[in-house]
Length: 434
Ligand code: HSE
Image (cartoon, rainbow, N blue to C red; front, side, top):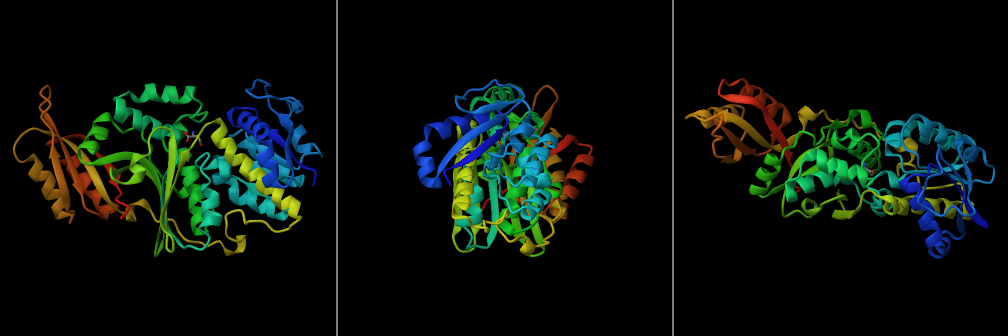
């Protein structure tokens, strides 16, 4: 093969990064791919870009790229659902390999897309969809192929991590930091995907499938975002020796696997607790290797382009070797995927941080403690903050030992029904990774 001809749909932050890096690192990329990798055609609604388009055909009709007989592989870099799905499926039907950075598309329609790709014997690669520049799909699918993966936990949304870090370090306001993340190009087109955990849930669903060999099940992911995390909780966690991170957790259990995204208290001595700003990190526990930790930029133009180009190089290698075989889409042969159930959130076992706002008078702490003890919930520590003079209320902060979520739900219900507590109890799950 003289060269791998790439058609790109989209000309935003990631596409511009891909074009720039391919031009800049042409020598390394072609030496690795075994042939030249050339972007020959770009389709986008607008020609506005940050890259050198010399020698690249441009169209505003994205289907021109899919129908271009010269194009071997289509890079879908527009994001979103409907149009992206149409592009990917049409490219597959045209016998073209596909590389995408679209985690929403893979998490929600991946099962169908992979089946179609298998029918047409083409590759669909999506490394750039999860944790930006970190080669985590490759690590799980290839590097850890000898392991039974027990669990993984990751900071997989850069925007959310950036917001939590700025709140902790600078006491900045949530909305103000989100605006900055949008200006820096980290946030999704709809930033509620970042702050309500949907983006992380997309990525976690993909990671869990690749880790455990199960079909994609985004719709069963328990999802809680960071929008209700206050500076007060961030500071309390710090006083208790923890950091609050927004984690995606997938854990294998005897009767299925946990699949959950939520803010989490992590002991500050854990390396993953020190991952700040827009950086992402994934901690993986394999039965043979033990724990391995992956860290890097989770968003941004060239970091994401790095993953897209790695996938293009993989495609070039397969095409050059004229092989009919390639790494299975989810790392396990399609016929070997297991029907493991996702465990309902009420059945998971975790430790908890609870913050109760209560009236400041004798016996309130005893009432709360007795609810917990009646339900068999062991308290690890209690922190009572000073009374807020204006309304004579006190924040009570409790850390519990591990207990089933169902029990904590009951306890919260009873605490909220006490005449002496005010508003809702704040509950944040705690993970120690021991
Ligand atoms: N909005 C995403 C994030 C972009 O903040 O991580 C990368 O997927």
